[in-house]
Image (cartoon, rainbow, N blue to C red; front, side, top):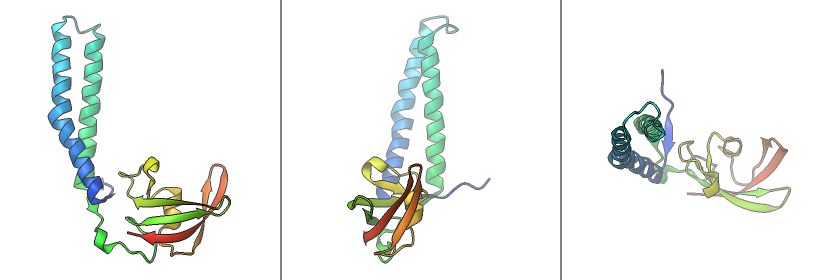
Length: 158
């Protein structure tokens, strides 16, 4: 099976590396201690503390595997090579909603870093796909559950 490329900025890479290190050095030890304490309570067959700790351990180990795979398949965005002629991964794009005449800035990132609350949208999201490769002035249409939203690209910067 070919693993999917994970596009990351330098800050996104650091964030994933820190999370991985925290899970390996802190969370693993915490959950191991919880399991030991729960076992010390005696019969683990009906011990909810033990069950909770084992479930958390499984989650942590799964997340560690996921992060390691993401980091192995990471492609870093070279911020010096971000093209400001067209919208691309790593660029910050100002879009004007043509219906409401409101502007919003989005930074286009890979799916691993996407966080709509921080205005970081995935290159695979509907808006990300619609604006990729488009120059300033372009009008794009994005299909959303409520219908179609039209945006005009007002600016592109690094």
